[in-house]
Length: 334
Image 1 (tube, rainbow, N blue to C red):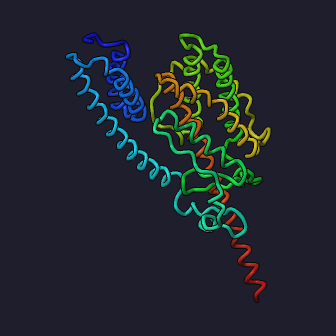
Image 2 (cartoon, rainbow, N blue to C red):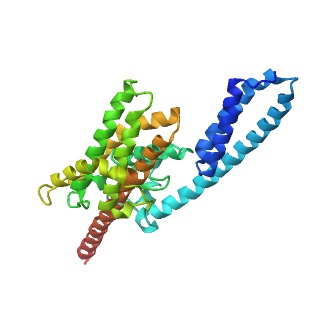
Image 3 (cartoon, one colour):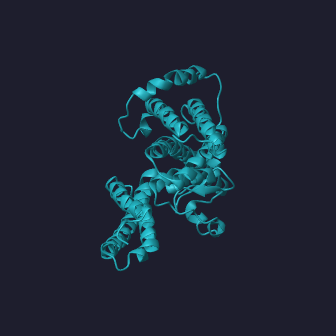
């Protein structure tokens, strides 16, 4: 056979696309595409035995196998570097000694046997588009049972979400954003679960535009989470009225939202976004990439920023209590 089958033509196109993804540093996506290329080659190469194309395809097949191995090595190296950076930047080494009960610090917690009974951590996905959903699930675990691990070594006790005297800065505004963004994801999620997305995927395109607007507004309100990426303001104008309505609803001092309520609101938002993860596993495109970027650099970044704040406040309280107990013991011994 001298004419390439449709499958082999698809494989050749995917090879080119994988190179583009690798150049964009989307190593996970590139590796997934290459694996699919190799699978197609293995299923179809026997059709070309005895033809001129067989030798060409054999060379290409060998080349792609080497590329895939190289990509997997790069992904592993990048994963180790990011994991190391993430652990260093999230919370300082001093803050890792989290007080989790009476006289119980993380260094003791790891020797207590409780760690062995904790569920195994979901491994960090290679595909960067899937990482925000992975981190959301880890954040949710910090709100349940005894708490959860943000990294393999850093355990966050659930008590940080139940501090009565600690108020997250501008918590009402954050709750309003979470609820509004949750509604937008819910609308599209319902359509997706009914298998009624339009052929052109206009629902996803509209969601991208809406999220662009929210990103601009959130970055303005919370500059610390801004990734310094300049975004066009045309999309912002499309939903500025909606954002203004949110701002009018927030009356300073009118009510106080508890940290527990905020935690529930975050969890509800996370759950409504998980259908995007399902879509990303089926296929990848620019709109889905934009949504994942928003979830990672806005939603997850905001949540991690608040976890860091709550952890600091929690440690302050625990240190005061620990000091007070020590003073009481000294006084009693006198």
